[in-house]
Length: 78
Image (cartoon, rainbow, N blue to C red; front, side):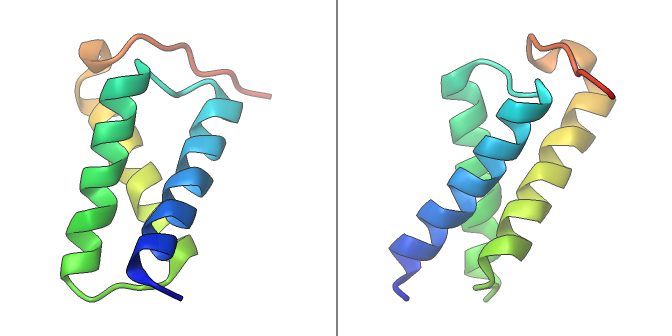
């Protein structure tokens, strides 16, 4: 699988997860953040789509926890 396909798949996994949970912020900001997180991992040699996606999600959630005003969203639980 090409790097491009790996990045795209990881991005859509992360995007879908955050969208379904209601944690996704502004589309442009969210997309840029997730892509940056995935690309940073690619540069370190990570190629597993699910790992890339999960770490990007974790980074998004950590950012939201440290800066609640960073994006406009409401998390839905349950």
